Length: 188
Image (cartoon, rainbow, N blue to C red; front, side, top):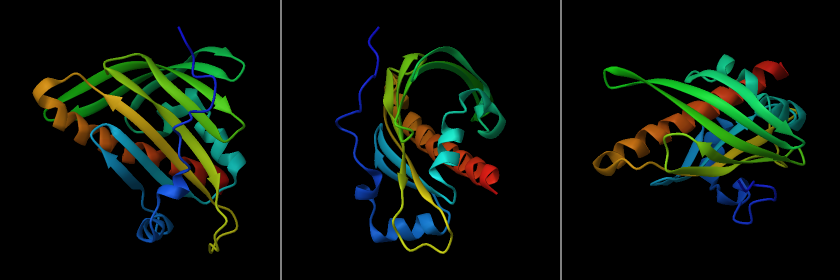
């Protein structure tokens, strides 16, 4: 099994992807989602220090306490900067509750980036990274960081692929909001 042990060369600083209207939305507390068809960048502005942001992003075993769709989360294996995490996701889709279990490999780099990839789960593939970027911008609060997630994901669902994309996009926004809110809760 290969690991994601070096920075993703295709990783783009999220700040370079944002337009002026995107920055305005972020400053108003909104989450920005860019991309389509399984390739996304999602960003949120957290009014906390980079240290607090990092402590939340790497608190894998507590994700079920603050991300609404995660029913359980646990670290299966740790080796230095590498963690294998199992999460059970539970959500309502149409009239039923769907539960899925995924296993991801997460490589932490310089307390600024976590590269991840799917090891097991019901997706064809999923990989990407989380990043924390300091903001050198005149903001009305003492500290803030841009939290971004860039992800590529695909499910083998045939005619239901469009529905997968819509659900995945909604999940990305919901997860970013929950993580940002937890960062700000811990920072207050």
